[in-house]
Amino acid sequence: MEAHLVEFLSLLLRWLHIIAGIAWIGSSFYFIWLDNSLTPPPPGSDNGKKGVSGELWAVHGGGFYNPQKYAVAPASLPDTLHWFKWEAYTTWLSGTALLVVVYWLRAQTMMVDPSLTTLSTPQAIGIGLGSMVLAWFVYDGLCRSPLGKHDTWLGAVVFALLTLLAWGLHQFLSGRAAFIHVGTAIGTIMVANVFFVIIPGQKKMVEAMRAGGLPDPIYGKRGKQRSVHNNYFTLPVLFIMISNHYASTYGHPQAWVILVLISAAGVSIRHFFNRRHKGVLAWQYPALGAGLLGIVAWWTAPRILPLPPLAQPATFEQVRAIVGQHCVSCHAPVPTFPGITQPPGGVLLHTPDAIAQNAQRMYQQVVVTRIMPMANTTQMTDLERAVVAAWVKDGGKAK
Image (cartoon, rainbow, N blue to C red; front, side, top):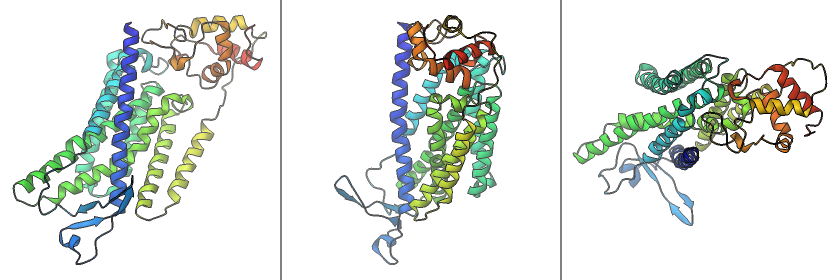
């Protein structure tokens, strides 16, 4: 019953995280599109005299809309202001809770790779938590430094430091855990931008107007810069959220490079859309993104490492014994491996028919990517992998 409750809690947190993330990313995409699509009012027009810097007309859902943006603030504060913050906070809180349930509470299974380092649970969690906190302080310091006045150079330095983070995490954590902690580091930067910069700046602008003064434009400029940064972070983070389904990425020997290439492709594609919203068809950016993804597709293609030769043909009984020793503790209706409450991916290997049914999956995970057993905690040998490979190539039958 306890295992079921933990699994159900994970389900609810993941669902909430996706719902909140859709709302947050949706508003980010919309407001960047809106900001890039505004048209300045004609000189001498009423809107221009009121301080409107841009406006547009749109039709959606059977109605017409006329959003306007003020250069600094309207002449008077409206009675009702709509704030956009809880989507960000809920996304981060639910994502962090999910991180704790899925990774930190099962650190020895989900985070530690004995082939890299031998870490205790507190050490593994400390690395993960430290990466989140450190990423924010370094990023925020760069934005507040003189470098923060040069957006292109700032973006290049931030990307380089996130690349360094990806490399560093892969020296200590399993590929899957390293991926997700790069994502949580970026997600922490994003929500901290909202909590520490964007919302406080907006509150100061509102307070100035309520006091009868004119808001300082610097708060709007800072908020805009951080909002644009969050917009470019979204596609890499979205990839990381789904990456656990694709072992060819996080299970690659140079997984951190794969992550960097896919993230760079996401940033490039996002930049194309941001430029497109301004009326510029900069096709070189999606072309660059497609090129980077093509490199990833080529680099992650199956390349089976050499396996030792077998003295005699592999038999199903040998395979069944290997599966019983290395796989069934997780891939059973009721897993017995510590920290595993449900068979990963819903794959069952507890009967001969189940083993035969999943022969091709076993080949991919055990022989091609070698990510199973997870972090090779059960010490499957190359000879055992060779037996599985030979059995699958011979038809993968339960005989």
